[in-house]
Each structure stands twice: as structure tokens, then as C-alpha cells.
Amino acid sequence: IKQEFSEEPFHAKRILQPWTRGHVAGLTAISKIDAERNRLSYRGYDIHDLVDHCSFDEVAYLLIYGDLPNQSQLDAFCKTVGAHRGVPSEVISLLRTLPPAASQMDRVKAAVAALALFDPQREERTAETYRAVAVRLYAQLPTIIVNSYRLSQGQEPATPRADLNHNANFFWMLTGHEPSDLIGRAFNVSQILYAEHGYNASTFAARVTVSTLSDIYSGVVSAIGTLKGPLHGGANEASMQMLLEIGSPERAAEWVREALARKQRIMGFGHREYKHGDERARIAKQYVIELVNSKGATHWLEMADIIEREMMQAKGLYPNVDFPIGLLYYLMDIPIPLYTPIFMMSRITGWCAHIIEQLENNRLIRPESEYIGPSERPVLPLSQRP
Ligand code: ACO
Image (cartoon, rainbow, N blue to C red; front, side, top):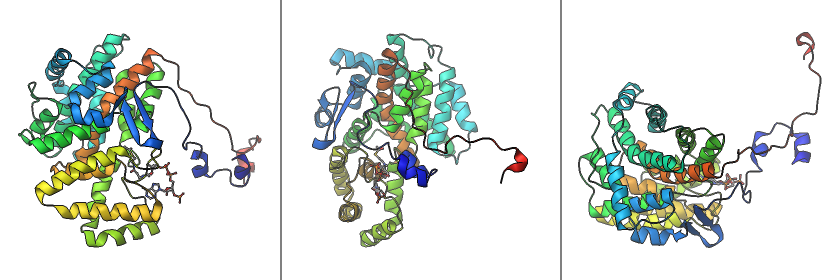
């Protein structure tokens, strides 16, 4: 690298190159990504088993507390979550004042930063408090997300229901109805698939932040800002926007070829770790197929299949989890600006698990960099500089 830089010292793209595969930044007992075998497990449980057998509330408990709950633990957890779904009225008032056209991720980020100021436990450093804050964040994020959207659309905020599970409460607040059986199942699976993924960019940002002994909320705010980008969580919205722009299966192949010729990235494709496909995308696609069939909207699936084929032929790239899930949420009639916040509503569990793991074994995360700029040189007086 140094040699290349002696000729082109300020080429930013090359400076970022070392962050390729194979850099282990730390240890974790939360999830295992086996990219060679396309396997992902949370605390030892394969995601296939989790999506087949668990509600998202069980997976949230697993990530926050370390093991799956038994019935009485789950009942107690859901009762606590239900009781904590409300947010301070000041946070709702803040959401009323924020620019309605701003991105929902930015609005929610501001609201979570404000929420911290109303939590007297935010600086407490005990294992119990960490988990209590994590559970409250899990309970409150859907309330903030839905009401951020409602207020930006000129609607009044909705009141959460304590008697519903995580998924049903979200739909209730957004639409006034509980989801159908199929939508409820598909949404549950999407939340499980989005919950946790090792040292991904947003989780790493959260760990870096709390490793300075900053508070949990600051870690979560860092993570929200990181998830927003289209190379990470923002890809689910961007990939659905792309499908809408393409519009019909007949245009799909040509659209992709032209975009690739312009060196444009196709959102929802490729992954830093998975080079043989993302198993989460395969699982999510089964639910896309079910929803497409139930709605008779097969053109979406045809379009998705053509794009997948083109990307494989042209670049050897597979879809990642964001490609089918963007379409899945669209088929559920969820507004597109909510897709990345919904990802956050799930990933909050993984973020909190990592924040707690970091704080309970803390050492400042401070990577070294290798200097590749100009060699030492004197500062010329202003009048003598070229
Ligand atoms: N579309 C077109 N080309 C791509 C894509 C894509 N989606 N992804 C990678 N490539 C190409 C690059 O242009 C590059 O080609 P080149 O060598 O000819 O210049 C090559 O593949 C390697 O690209 P990198 O960015 O170095 O690959 P990396 O593995 O680091 O990228 C990333 C991973 C950022 C996810 C990338 O695949 C991408 O930008 N995808 C689109 C955004 C996206 O879907 N993000 C969601 C990720 S999953 C998640 O966050 C839940």
C-alpha cells in the first residue's frame, strides 16, 4: 500500500481498502456468521430454528438476557415491555416540532437522543440497569417510530397497547388494525432476521461509543446514524425505490445493465461477509412469494427474479437480506420511509446485547492507523506558500 501511495498519496478510496474481509475487530458470544456455509446463529441457535419456532419477543429476550425464555420468563418480559411502551410527552412534543420532510431515521435519532435525558438510570453502571434500559428501548422504539411517521403525515400520535406483542402493537399503532396471520408471520420473521449480525457497521459504532464509558443511549444514537446509510440499513428503502423506478419485469434486465454500465451500485445486492449468498435473503424470499401469491401481484416477483439473474451473470453477486425485505414490507402496504426504522426496531436488541457485552468486559476500542501521507515538511510563512 505504501508503495502505491508514494505515487498517489491522497487517494481516499485506497486509504479505505484495508477494511476488507478477514479483519477481526473483537470477540463476541452473541452471534456467529459462518459465511462459507451460509449459516447464522444467535447465541448458538440457528436462525432457521428461530424463525420456525419463536416469536420476536422470545428472540429479543434471547439477545438481551443470553438464553431463550421459558413460559413464565416470557410472560414477565412481555408484561414489562407492554408496561414501558409509553414515551415522555416531551419526546412526542419534540417530534411535532421537527421538520416533517426530514428522513424518519433523523427524526427518530433526535427523539432517542432526547429520550435519554428523561431516563434517570442512563448513567448507572450495573448489569441490571443495562438490561432494564435495553428492555425499555425495545419497548419504546416502536412508539417513537410510528409516531414520528404519523406526526410527519399530519396525523395525531397513536397510543401503544400493552396487551399486544411487539409485532401486533406496531401494526396496531400504524394502521389501527392487528396484522393478518400471513403478514404477522412474515413480519415476525423479518424482525428475527434483522435482529443481530456480529460486528456490522452500526453495531460496531455502538460498541466504539460505549467503550469510552459513554452511556447506552449515546451508543444507540451512534448506531442509528450508522444504520441510516444506504450501504447498510438504508438499502431496504433504496432497493424498493429501485423496483418502483424499474416499474415492470419487461424493463428490469435493461435497467440493471444500464445502471451497471454507469457503475451504479444495485441496492440490496452484495455483502462484505457473504460471498455465496445471504441465507436471511433466502428465508425472507419465501415470505415474499407467499405474499405475492396471496395478493396476485406476481410482477414484483418476476422483476426481482430478473434482477437477481442479471446481477449473478454480470457481477456474480447475490441479493442480501435488504432486497427481499424491502419488497416484503411494500407488499404489507408499509410506507417506504419506515423500512429502515423498522430494521432499527429489531436491531435495537442486537445493539443492546453488544453494548452490554462491551460494557461488561470493557476496554477502549481505539484502532491504530498507518500514516501514508507526505513525509515531514516545514510550515512556510503564508506569504511564501505557492
Ligand atoms: N452493485 C454493483 N456492484 C457492486 C455491488 C452492488 N450492490 N456490491 C459490490 N459491487 C462491486 C463493486 O463495485 C466492486 O467492483 P469493482 O471491484 O469492479 O470496483 C466490487 O463489487 C467490490 O465492492 P466492495 O464495495 O469492495 O465490496 P464489499 O464487499 O466491501 O461491499 C457492500 C459490501 C457495501 C454491501 C456492497 O456490496 C454494496 O454496496 N451493496 C449495495 C448496498 C447494500 O445492499 N447494502 C446492504 C448490506 S446488508 C445490510 O447492511 C443489512
